Length: 144
Image (cartoon, one colour):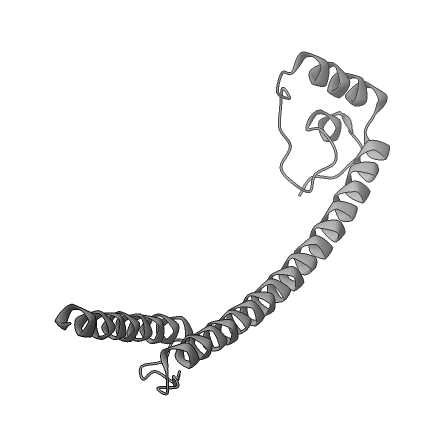
């Protein structure tokens, strides 16, 4: 007879521990110090339903926070894509301008370097469009 009496007490203790764990876990998920999750203490069946309802509410809250974070990340990525498209367009325009300013010999040399995979023989500082040999061959220019 005593074993029958101990069994419900042990089960109630297990339910109590499960409730305490659930409250602690949900509170940590929600980031609150004091458990704002209240359980119905009437009977174990009602408590289980209350726990299920609170878990569902917590899952909905987590889902809404995740969806908000994802929406923010999507907006950031859209902005980055927009900036990259603008940068790509700018670089394409610059590339087309450089192609029009380059001499046929320079273009042929560049194509040969692309085919062999070798780096350019001389590198120009950014912003200059003429090789160093061309200004030296112009004798009519004044030097300061």
